[in-house]
Length: 252
Ligand SMILES: [Zn+2]
Image 1 (cartoon, protein in one colour):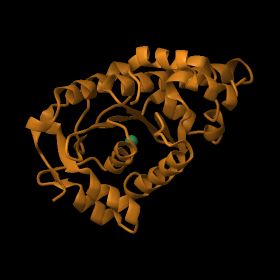
Image 2 (tube, helix red, strand yellow):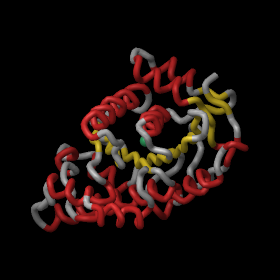
Image 3 (tube, protein in one colour):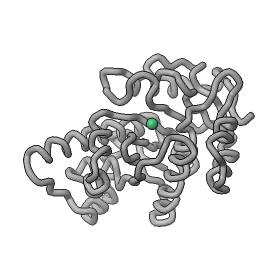
Image 4 (cartoon, protein in one colour):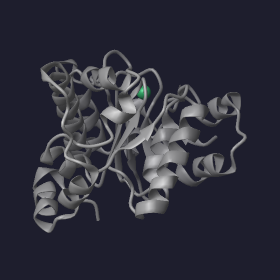
């Protein structure tokens, strides 16, 4: 068995982050939507169990698993959904069906990961123009905090989504050498990657703001994006990097 319930190994900070993100007032998730994870020592990680609610999460709502085994599933390919379900089993509990998305993010270098379905963002990801809508930032803080998000077209949650996210993040790693801070999942939601719990919360909050700005902008006129070159400049400037650190920690 790859996963086990080990509540004593689940960091308090993971439980606290999960409950904050799951607060219905934040409108990031409802019911049992969304999941969080953190990397533990020895190539292990803790991820939310399937079917549990984020706002009511306790240490017993997470399972602990081995990262290399699941990275191998993605690298090798050819695993079917039934086999994945078996791999995610932890006795009476089971790791979230979206665990492979966390595996990709953690293997790419993130220490903390939060996957949510914010209403404001999903609305902008569920239109035909979604990819173009998010291709360039609309305001400087969006460029600084979110960097250049990775876009992943819709794929069914489970092995198909895991495989699609793996391919998209791999392509980004090959290009930039560093993991993205945000992954946009078409018709689905977002994945925030960070070195700290605060960082994934910051990225999630800014993604929601960026979505609202898009919705308001589309109602007010024609969007005038900053342009990708300027966005990269902003994200790479030392003073902006310092601002990002103040906003919630920087990636090592
Ligand atoms: Zn999801």
